[in-house]
Length: 120
Image 1 (spheres, rainbow, N blue to C red):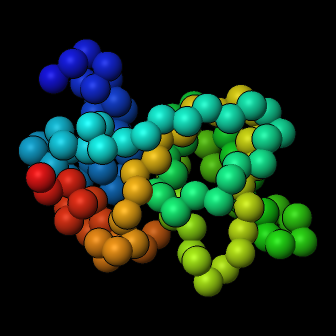
Image 2 (spheres, rainbow, N blue to C red):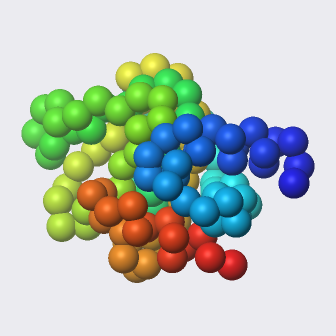
């Protein structure tokens, strides 16, 4: 595994639900991630992917622009297509995106998400 992918893998292993994965599942994840950078105050485009904050912080806003939750390093968020919400960068932020999880049965309360999607 490349050193860059190993670094991402080791980061994921520190945080739930990724810390519950088997070694082979955890090793498969970094190759599936997309990496995005957002500048402070930027509104993130609609993302249909599990969003994992690597560095920085994001605000989760309701349609009225009211703060619902703040996310920081190691936190993750999966948008609900039935609940309109917006993410905004509180500070310059680096995020990992893992697409197509909801179709694999993940919801924000289930560690099951990755076991299905990490399988090669």
